[in-house]
Image (cartoon, rainbow, N blue to C red; front, side, top):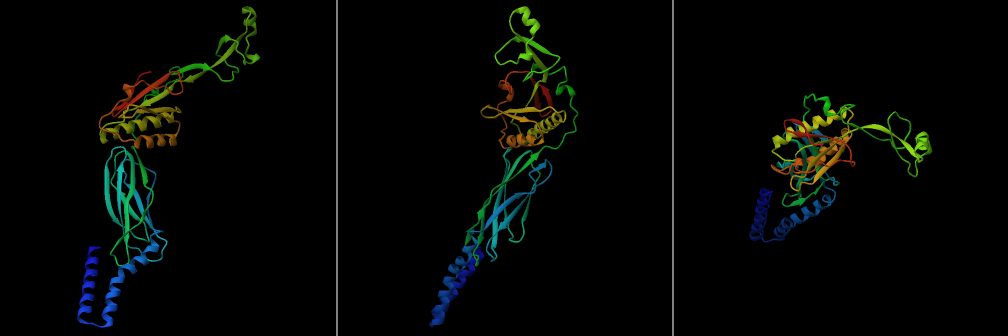
Amino acid sequence: MWSRRICYAALIGAAVLFQIFFRFYLSTYVLVLVLLLPVLSLLLALPGLAGSSVLVTPSTPAIVQGDQALFSLSLHSRTPLPLLRPRATVSWVNQLTGEPGKLRVMLAQERPHPLSLPPPHCGRLVCRVDRAWRCDLLGLFPLPVKKGPEGAVLVVPAPLDTDHDPSLAGGHNEGTILKPRPGGGPGEDYDLREYRAGDPLRSVHWKLSSKLDELVVRETLEPQQATIVVTYDHFGTPQVLDRTFAQLYALSRWLLAQERPHHIQWAAPLTGIPEDRMVDGGQALLACLELAFSTPAPLEGRSILDTALRVPGGPGRVRHLHVTPDGVEGGRS
Protein backbone atom coordinates (compact mmCIF):
# COMPACT_ATOMS: atom_id res chain seq x y z
CA MET A 1 0.00 0.00 0.00
CA TRP A 2 2.82 2.43 0.82
CA SER A 3 4.48 1.73 -2.52
CA ARG A 4 1.24 2.70 -4.28
CA ARG A 5 1.00 5.88 -2.24
CA ILE A 6 4.58 6.79 -3.17
CA CYS A 7 3.80 6.20 -6.83
CA TYR A 8 0.69 8.36 -6.58
CA ALA A 9 2.66 11.12 -4.86
CA ALA A 10 5.20 10.98 -7.69
CA LEU A 11 2.32 11.19 -10.17
CA ILE A 12 1.02 14.34 -8.46
CA GLY A 13 4.51 15.85 -8.53
CA ALA A 14 4.80 15.15 -12.25
CA ALA A 15 1.38 16.73 -12.87
CA VAL A 16 2.41 19.84 -10.92
CA LEU A 17 5.66 20.16 -12.89
CA PHE A 18 3.68 19.71 -16.09
CA GLN A 19 1.37 22.52 -14.98
CA ILE A 20 4.35 24.79 -14.21
CA PHE A 21 6.29 24.30 -17.43
CA PHE A 22 3.37 23.75 -19.81
CA ARG A 23 0.85 26.51 -19.15
CA PHE A 24 -2.03 25.34 -21.30
CA TYR A 25 -5.50 23.98 -20.47
CA LEU A 26 -4.30 20.40 -21.05
CA SER A 27 -1.89 20.57 -18.10
CA THR A 28 -4.70 21.90 -15.90
CA TYR A 29 -7.02 19.06 -16.92
CA VAL A 30 -4.27 16.53 -16.19
CA LEU A 31 -3.65 17.96 -12.72
CA VAL A 32 -7.37 17.98 -11.85
CA LEU A 33 -7.78 14.44 -13.14
CA VAL A 34 -4.84 13.21 -11.06
CA LEU A 35 -6.27 14.88 -7.95
CA LEU A 36 -9.72 13.38 -8.54
CA LEU A 37 -8.48 9.83 -9.13
CA PRO A 38 -8.57 8.82 -5.41
CA VAL A 39 -12.13 10.15 -5.06
CA LEU A 40 -13.24 8.23 -8.15
CA SER A 41 -11.48 5.12 -6.87
CA LEU A 42 -13.30 5.35 -3.52
CA LEU A 43 -16.68 5.91 -5.17
CA LEU A 44 -16.23 2.81 -7.32
CA ALA A 45 -15.20 0.73 -4.30
CA LEU A 46 -18.02 1.79 -1.96
CA PRO A 47 -20.80 -0.39 -3.51
CA GLY A 48 -18.84 -3.51 -2.68
CA LEU A 49 -18.40 -2.68 1.02
CA ALA A 50 -22.01 -3.33 2.04
CA GLY A 51 -22.00 -6.89 0.74
CA SER A 52 -18.46 -7.91 1.64
CA SER A 53 -17.77 -10.19 4.59
CA VAL A 54 -15.19 -12.69 5.81
CA LEU A 55 -16.42 -15.92 7.40
CA VAL A 56 -14.47 -18.41 9.53
CA THR A 57 -15.68 -21.99 9.16
CA PRO A 58 -14.22 -25.03 10.93
CA SER A 59 -13.83 -28.16 8.83
CA THR A 60 -15.32 -30.29 11.65
CA PRO A 61 -16.87 -29.43 15.03
CA ALA A 62 -14.51 -31.73 16.96
CA ILE A 63 -11.09 -33.28 16.45
CA VAL A 64 -8.94 -35.71 18.41
CA GLN A 65 -5.93 -34.30 20.19
CA GLY A 66 -2.87 -34.64 17.99
CA ASP A 67 -4.71 -33.80 14.77
CA GLN A 68 -4.45 -30.40 13.13
CA ALA A 69 -7.35 -27.99 13.51
CA LEU A 70 -8.53 -26.94 10.04
CA PHE A 71 -10.45 -23.73 9.32
CA SER A 72 -11.34 -21.96 6.09
CA LEU A 73 -11.61 -18.21 5.50
CA SER A 74 -14.22 -17.31 2.89
CA LEU A 75 -14.51 -13.87 1.32
CA HIS A 76 -18.00 -13.02 0.10
CA SER A 77 -18.88 -9.99 -2.06
CA ARG A 78 -21.98 -8.87 -3.93
CA THR A 79 -20.14 -6.66 -6.40
CA PRO A 80 -18.91 -8.09 -9.71
CA LEU A 81 -15.79 -5.94 -9.45
CA PRO A 82 -12.73 -7.70 -8.06
CA LEU A 83 -11.70 -6.80 -4.51
CA LEU A 84 -8.18 -5.43 -4.58
CA ARG A 85 -5.72 -6.98 -2.12
CA PRO A 86 -8.22 -8.35 0.45
CA ARG A 87 -6.48 -9.25 3.70
CA ALA A 88 -7.40 -10.29 7.21
CA THR A 89 -5.78 -10.62 10.61
CA VAL A 90 -6.85 -13.88 12.22
CA SER A 91 -6.32 -14.85 15.86
CA TRP A 92 -7.10 -17.98 17.81
CA VAL A 93 -7.07 -19.01 21.45
CA ASN A 94 -7.56 -22.19 23.42
CA GLN A 95 -10.20 -21.17 25.95
CA LEU A 96 -9.09 -23.87 28.39
CA THR A 97 -5.33 -23.25 28.46
CA GLY A 98 -5.29 -19.66 27.18
CA GLU A 99 -2.73 -20.42 24.43
CA PRO A 100 -3.07 -17.67 21.75
CA GLY A 101 -1.94 -17.23 18.16
CA LYS A 102 -2.24 -14.63 15.39
CA LEU A 103 -1.66 -14.60 11.65
CA ARG A 104 -2.16 -12.21 8.72
CA VAL A 105 -3.43 -13.84 5.53
CA MET A 106 -4.09 -12.77 1.95
CA LEU A 107 -7.59 -13.75 0.82
CA ALA A 108 -8.88 -14.78 -2.58
CA GLN A 109 -12.36 -13.86 -3.74
CA GLU A 110 -12.89 -16.99 -5.84
CA ARG A 111 -11.84 -19.69 -3.35
CA PRO A 112 -11.64 -20.18 0.46
CA HIS A 113 -8.30 -19.75 2.15
CA PRO A 114 -7.33 -22.85 4.20
CA LEU A 115 -5.94 -22.25 7.67
CA SER A 116 -4.20 -25.13 9.44
CA LEU A 117 -3.36 -24.64 13.11
CA PRO A 118 -0.74 -26.74 14.91
CA PRO A 119 -1.91 -29.68 17.05
CA PRO A 120 -3.23 -28.06 20.22
CA HIS A 121 -3.82 -29.28 23.75
CA CYS A 122 -7.27 -30.38 24.87
CA GLY A 123 -9.74 -27.51 24.94
CA ARG A 124 -12.02 -25.40 22.83
CA LEU A 125 -10.09 -23.71 20.03
CA VAL A 126 -11.80 -20.48 18.96
CA CYS A 127 -10.72 -18.77 15.73
CA ARG A 128 -11.91 -15.26 14.86
CA VAL A 129 -11.21 -12.47 12.40
CA ASP A 130 -9.81 -9.49 14.29
CA ARG A 131 -9.61 -7.20 11.27
CA ALA A 132 -10.43 -7.54 7.60
CA TRP A 133 -9.90 -4.97 4.91
CA ARG A 134 -9.58 -4.42 1.18
CA CYS A 135 -8.15 -1.56 -0.86
CA ASP A 136 -9.79 0.83 -3.28
CA LEU A 137 -9.11 0.39 -6.98
CA LEU A 138 -5.90 2.40 -6.78
CA GLY A 139 -4.77 0.62 -3.63
CA LEU A 140 -4.33 3.86 -1.69
CA PHE A 141 -6.82 3.44 1.17
CA PRO A 142 -7.76 0.43 3.31
CA LEU A 143 -11.52 -0.16 3.45
CA PRO A 144 -12.99 -2.26 6.28
CA VAL A 145 -14.74 -5.54 5.47
CA LYS A 146 -17.45 -6.96 7.71
CA LYS A 147 -16.32 -9.75 10.03
CA GLY A 148 -18.42 -12.89 10.40
CA PRO A 149 -18.94 -14.90 13.59
CA GLU A 150 -16.09 -16.84 15.14
CA GLY A 151 -15.55 -20.55 14.54
CA ALA A 152 -14.76 -23.10 17.22
CA VAL A 153 -13.35 -26.63 17.28
CA LEU A 154 -13.56 -28.97 20.25
CA VAL A 155 -10.28 -30.80 20.84
CA VAL A 156 -11.17 -34.03 22.66
CA PRO A 157 -8.57 -36.36 24.21
CA ALA A 158 -7.21 -39.30 22.28
CA PRO A 159 -8.81 -42.61 23.37
CA LEU A 160 -6.96 -44.42 26.13
CA ASP A 161 -6.45 -48.17 26.01
CA THR A 162 -7.62 -48.82 29.58
CA ASP A 163 -9.64 -51.61 31.15
CA HIS A 164 -11.54 -50.34 34.17
CA ASP A 165 -12.50 -52.51 37.11
CA PRO A 166 -16.18 -53.56 36.70
CA SER A 167 -16.74 -52.66 40.36
CA LEU A 168 -16.45 -48.96 39.41
CA ALA A 169 -19.89 -49.14 37.83
CA GLY A 170 -21.36 -51.10 40.79
CA GLY A 171 -22.92 -54.54 40.54
CA HIS A 172 -26.42 -55.77 41.40
CA ASN A 173 -25.66 -56.09 45.10
CA GLU A 174 -23.12 -53.27 45.26
CA GLY A 175 -24.43 -49.78 44.75
CA THR A 176 -28.16 -50.68 44.66
CA ILE A 177 -30.91 -49.67 47.07
CA LEU A 178 -34.62 -50.38 47.34
CA LYS A 179 -37.00 -47.47 46.82
CA PRO A 180 -40.80 -47.25 46.54
CA ARG A 181 -42.01 -47.82 43.02
CA PRO A 182 -44.03 -44.88 41.68
CA GLY A 183 -47.62 -45.99 41.13
CA GLY A 184 -47.14 -49.24 43.05
CA GLY A 185 -47.95 -52.53 41.34
CA PRO A 186 -46.96 -56.17 41.94
CA GLY A 187 -43.49 -57.02 43.20
CA GLU A 188 -41.58 -59.42 45.44
CA ASP A 189 -40.13 -56.70 47.70
CA TYR A 190 -42.46 -54.41 49.61
CA ASP A 191 -42.72 -52.37 52.78
CA LEU A 192 -45.65 -51.76 55.14
CA ARG A 193 -46.83 -48.34 56.22
CA GLU A 194 -49.94 -46.51 57.37
CA TYR A 195 -52.62 -45.65 54.86
CA ARG A 196 -52.43 -42.13 53.38
CA ALA A 197 -55.15 -40.30 51.51
CA GLY A 198 -54.92 -41.11 47.82
CA ASP A 199 -53.49 -44.62 48.20
CA PRO A 200 -55.32 -47.13 45.95
CA LEU A 201 -57.48 -49.63 47.75
CA ARG A 202 -55.77 -52.56 45.99
CA SER A 203 -52.59 -51.75 47.93
CA VAL A 204 -54.29 -52.16 51.33
CA HIS A 205 -53.10 -55.19 53.32
CA TRP A 206 -56.60 -56.25 54.49
CA LYS A 207 -55.52 -59.17 56.66
CA LEU A 208 -53.01 -57.15 58.65
CA SER A 209 -55.33 -54.14 58.75
CA SER A 210 -58.05 -56.24 60.40
CA LYS A 211 -55.64 -57.37 63.09
CA LEU A 212 -54.30 -53.89 63.84
CA ASP A 213 -57.67 -52.24 63.47
CA GLU A 214 -56.20 -49.60 61.14
CA LEU A 215 -55.49 -49.45 57.44
CA VAL A 216 -52.05 -50.67 56.42
CA VAL A 217 -50.86 -50.54 52.81
CA ARG A 218 -48.28 -52.66 51.03
CA GLU A 219 -45.75 -50.35 49.26
CA THR A 220 -43.91 -52.10 46.44
CA LEU A 221 -40.13 -51.58 46.40
CA GLU A 222 -37.81 -51.84 43.43
CA PRO A 223 -34.02 -51.87 43.25
CA GLN A 224 -32.34 -48.67 42.12
CA GLN A 225 -28.64 -48.34 41.47
CA ALA A 226 -26.67 -45.67 43.22
CA THR A 227 -25.97 -42.41 41.40
CA ILE A 228 -22.45 -42.23 40.01
CA VAL A 229 -20.69 -38.88 40.42
CA VAL A 230 -17.38 -38.39 38.61
CA THR A 231 -15.26 -35.43 39.75
CA TYR A 232 -12.00 -33.86 38.65
CA ASP A 233 -9.94 -30.73 39.43
CA HIS A 234 -10.16 -27.93 36.85
CA PHE A 235 -6.62 -26.53 37.10
CA GLY A 236 -3.05 -27.44 36.22
CA THR A 237 -0.57 -27.13 33.37
CA PRO A 238 -1.74 -27.96 29.82
CA GLN A 239 0.10 -31.29 30.03
CA VAL A 240 -1.60 -32.18 33.33
CA LEU A 241 -4.99 -31.17 31.96
CA ASP A 242 -4.43 -33.35 28.88
CA ARG A 243 -3.84 -36.39 31.09
CA THR A 244 -6.75 -35.57 33.40
CA PHE A 245 -9.25 -35.14 30.59
CA ALA A 246 -7.94 -38.26 28.86
CA GLN A 247 -8.73 -40.26 32.01
CA LEU A 248 -12.11 -38.50 32.41
CA TYR A 249 -13.08 -39.06 28.78
CA ALA A 250 -12.11 -42.74 28.91
CA LEU A 251 -13.99 -43.34 32.18
CA SER A 252 -17.13 -41.57 31.00
CA ARG A 253 -17.24 -43.50 27.73
CA TRP A 254 -16.68 -46.75 29.62
CA LEU A 255 -19.55 -45.98 32.01
CA LEU A 256 -21.83 -45.22 29.07
CA ALA A 257 -20.84 -48.55 27.51
CA GLN A 258 -21.89 -50.19 30.79
CA GLU A 259 -25.26 -48.39 30.48
CA ARG A 260 -24.51 -46.32 33.57
CA PRO A 261 -25.50 -42.65 33.21
CA HIS A 262 -23.52 -40.46 35.56
CA HIS A 263 -22.83 -36.91 36.66
CA ILE A 264 -19.57 -35.05 36.01
CA GLN A 265 -18.71 -32.39 38.57
CA TRP A 266 -15.88 -29.91 38.97
CA ALA A 267 -15.33 -26.75 40.98
CA ALA A 268 -14.78 -23.33 39.44
CA PRO A 269 -11.04 -22.83 40.09
CA LEU A 270 -11.44 -19.26 41.41
CA THR A 271 -14.75 -19.29 43.29
CA GLY A 272 -15.03 -22.97 44.19
CA ILE A 273 -18.66 -23.07 43.00
CA PRO A 274 -19.38 -26.63 41.78
CA GLU A 275 -20.56 -27.34 38.27
CA ASP A 276 -22.68 -30.41 37.55
CA ARG A 277 -23.60 -31.98 34.23
CA MET A 278 -25.64 -35.12 33.61
CA VAL A 279 -24.09 -37.48 31.04
CA ASP A 280 -26.43 -40.09 29.58
CA GLY A 281 -25.05 -40.37 26.04
CA GLY A 282 -22.32 -39.37 23.62
CA GLN A 283 -23.85 -35.99 22.79
CA ALA A 284 -24.28 -35.15 26.47
CA LEU A 285 -20.61 -36.04 27.05
CA LEU A 286 -19.48 -33.70 24.25
CA ALA A 287 -21.72 -30.94 25.61
CA CYS A 288 -20.17 -31.42 29.06
CA LEU A 289 -16.65 -31.26 27.62
CA GLU A 290 -17.52 -28.15 25.62
CA LEU A 291 -18.66 -26.39 28.79
CA ALA A 292 -15.55 -27.49 30.70
CA PHE A 293 -13.23 -26.56 27.83
CA SER A 294 -14.82 -23.09 27.61
CA THR A 295 -13.81 -22.36 31.22
CA PRO A 296 -10.21 -21.12 31.64
CA ALA A 297 -8.08 -23.42 33.80
CA PRO A 298 -5.34 -21.66 35.84
CA LEU A 299 -2.20 -23.37 37.08
CA GLU A 300 -3.65 -23.51 40.60
CA GLY A 301 -7.20 -23.39 41.92
CA ARG A 302 -9.76 -24.85 44.28
CA SER A 303 -10.25 -28.58 44.31
CA ILE A 304 -13.68 -30.18 44.09
CA LEU A 305 -12.59 -32.37 47.02
CA ASP A 306 -12.44 -29.29 49.28
CA THR A 307 -16.21 -28.81 48.97
CA ALA A 308 -19.09 -30.95 50.12
CA LEU A 309 -20.11 -33.49 47.52
CA ARG A 310 -23.37 -32.40 45.94
CA VAL A 311 -25.79 -35.27 45.51
CA PRO A 312 -27.86 -34.84 42.30
CA GLY A 313 -31.56 -35.48 42.63
CA GLY A 314 -31.78 -35.29 46.42
CA PRO A 315 -30.95 -37.92 49.05
CA GLY A 316 -29.82 -41.36 48.00
CA ARG A 317 -26.77 -43.52 47.73
CA VAL A 318 -23.95 -42.02 45.67
CA ARG A 319 -20.89 -43.69 44.21
CA HIS A 320 -18.10 -41.12 43.96
CA LEU A 321 -15.19 -41.53 41.51
CA HIS A 322 -12.44 -38.91 41.39
CA VAL A 323 -10.30 -38.60 38.27
CA THR A 324 -6.63 -37.64 38.50
CA PRO A 325 -3.94 -37.36 35.81
CA ASP A 326 -2.80 -40.86 36.74
CA GLY A 327 -6.11 -42.70 36.93
CA VAL A 328 -9.35 -43.06 38.86
CA GLU A 329 -9.63 -43.01 42.62
CA GLY A 330 -12.51 -43.98 44.88
CA GLY A 331 -13.95 -40.93 46.54
CA ARG A 332 -16.36 -40.08 49.28
CA SER A 333 -19.92 -41.31 49.52
